[in-house]
Amino acid sequence: MVGKDQVILKALFEHASLGIIICDNEGKMQMVNPFAERIFGFESGEMDLQDIEILLPAKIRTKHIGHRKNYMQNPSPRSMGAGMNLMAMRKDGSEFFVEVSLSYYEVNNHLYVVSFINDITENKKIKDKLQEQTEELEKKIDERTKELSQALIELSHSNDDLESEIQQRIESEKKVQESLEKEKELSELKSRFVSMASHEFRTPLGGILSSNSLIEKYIGLEKFDKTKKHTDTIRKSVKGLTSILNDFLSLDKLEQKKITPNAHLFNLPQFLRNFVREFQDIQATEYHEIETQFENDSFEVYQDSEMIKNILTNLLSNSVKYSPKDRPIIISASLSGKTFTLKVQDFGIGIPESEQKHLFERFFRAGNVTNIQGTGLGLSIVVKYLEYLNGHINFESAQDVGTTFKVILPKELIV
Image 1 (cartoon, rainbow, N blue to C red):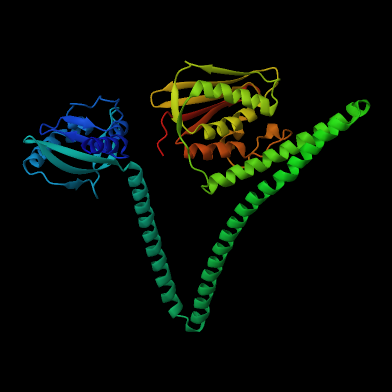
Image 2: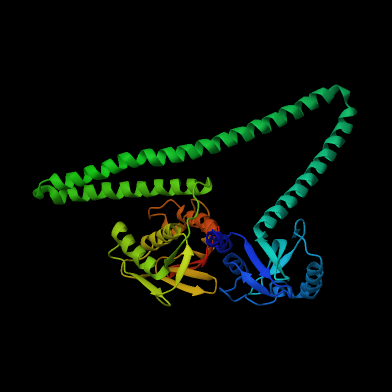
């Protein structure tokens, strides 16, 4: 039974989603669980036997030594950081907010302190934002109250119009409320329509494509050339409409928070090779040469490969549409510290400089692509995916020279 208990305790220690650090009475770290190593940016075992003060900003280390010694003289379970701006420091020198709970135990007259550490940076950002919004709301309420008070004073000088003015205010507020309700209903209706339309249109579109294939199969060879151009037009139109519906459905799911990241460890170069091969098969881009470039073939990332695939599909589709078939498209990947960069480079028509500031807006299409099919939603969908993956995107482009998109993502996605 003792062995089983030890296994359970070890599993709890190693797989806890909370940082756990055990120090001796000299403040040296004796045991550190993997989660604590990750939030402080250290490799496995790198923190062992180091002073606990290395995890604190330099300006408070000396003061902390005194607090630590006082705690050792009178240990008790307690929490630190609740309601306070308690700071910790990662290996790379970056600081972040934490909450810390302390406990202790004795073994052979030696005192050990257990620290339970929680990274509350995101929670604090949310709390600070709520506080800022609360203060702003209170300010607006105060201003509105003063305005109303002044209005009442002015209305009191016109008793004949007082009741009418009050009624107008009530009606105005009622109209505003009704307007808000209608806007909410329209938003919900739009979401339901987009979802319904996308799903309901897929079946007949699929049927049209199947029938189109059958027409080509059963038609006589002597008439094949005459009908082929028409069946090709049908296929191209249906695929274009299907692409539009897919864009609407993807954007709706992203905005409605109907998807969640599913991170896993995978080899990035191998993933990109497979992606390019599948893309060429599905999109029939055999006339476009797509090159892949990597610094090495061995680096792995812990990310959501499906979302990355959707991002690259949008970027690569644009490159294919807006590039000549005799020029290559290059996809490259590089690793830098805790992030990696994906580049999609083409040598196509480029984006006019005067219009580049609007590039990530919904339904925006540059003036030099109006004769090419598209919805103007692809890049806004990319931005939405990157919000889920804690990444960002930038680009460089020159008209008639080409465009390069750079997607920067964390090597390890923490949801």
